[in-house]
Image 1: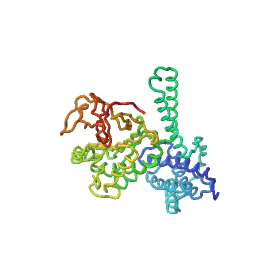
Image 2: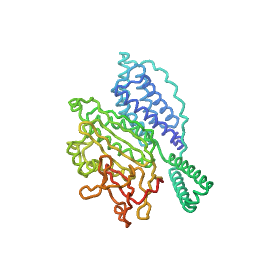
Image 3: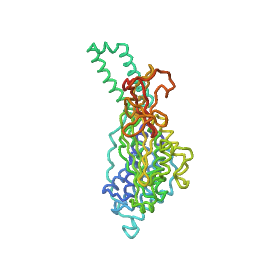
Image 4: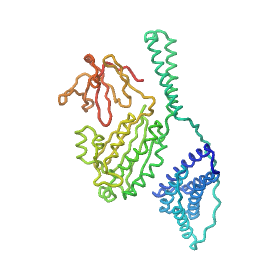
Length: 474
């Protein structure tokens, strides 16, 4: 088929990329020595299915390469063992298949020769004569997945979210027109507004879910990226991912892969010690880098941790003076690498990541302990189109503060003075206190006695902002 129907081609690409993700995960596990009895059979089925579907669509380059992979895996099944050194050419074959599936691949004669040589080595080892073993009939390919999503243009989803937002605002205006006293006095009006509020919330949640995607959409390729980075650095590193079913706004997600690779590259290049250094420190030779995602209210927290050397005491001292380790590491030209390499040490990666996260209204924080490791914490809004805020009042004006940045609300009773500046003592920690009007450059009367203050945080810094009153969440 020279010009395959675009709808079937798109379905094929989705299915093929999902199977290639599975193959990469399985090959990385086999290379690391984690042997699953059904691993090779699963690899064979994925390659066989891709080959068959590509043949039906007339995608000859995909079919030929998938067939070569299938031949290698068939010989491995016959031999009963998977040589770890086979993982590398097979991983490169999945890369090439992915490019061909996307429509931008080139010829791969060298890779086909390498795969043929790999198969021949298994055949020779098994027979001792070089004769090919009897080819076992391939397992029947599993039926195509019944899970088929309905494709909706992003613009339509955004329009739906805009309408949801306008509907919520209309409800707030309606409550204002009716008046709080009448709502409280008329039980029917109150009940109807409560029902409308619940329906609006359900509609909002449904609309947000249409705009979000699971983080696994981009994390599937990260174990392979970490493996390649570690190999180039001469290190042994395992990436452990959890919470990748957590969903995030698709606009954020589509641009988050490169920042995450930056952070993982830093963890491997800056954080993880050499094998010799780890042995001297009494650590396992294989380092562990983890990526954990979790939804927290209207935000998603992504934490990348390593069990490496951590930052130096000198850098931590500078962070205490500056107020944030993230600020120190993002300083232009700053680098913790002893020497500049191709993978790390140019002092621009973290600054770019910090700017990118903050462009979406998110925050980034870094925690580290010398000799123990480093945590990088990203907090991102779950959805960009709708933002949960805490409404506060100061000087007769209402302000919305992103709820993800609000740690708590406290009453200002006895303010302290730290270096001549007002501050609060909260559970043994001193937090700078400001008047919200002063912070915004607005005119307002003096704060009332026992005024409320909201403690907000971002980039590793905290501040308490005093206001006239708290109105509520919206």
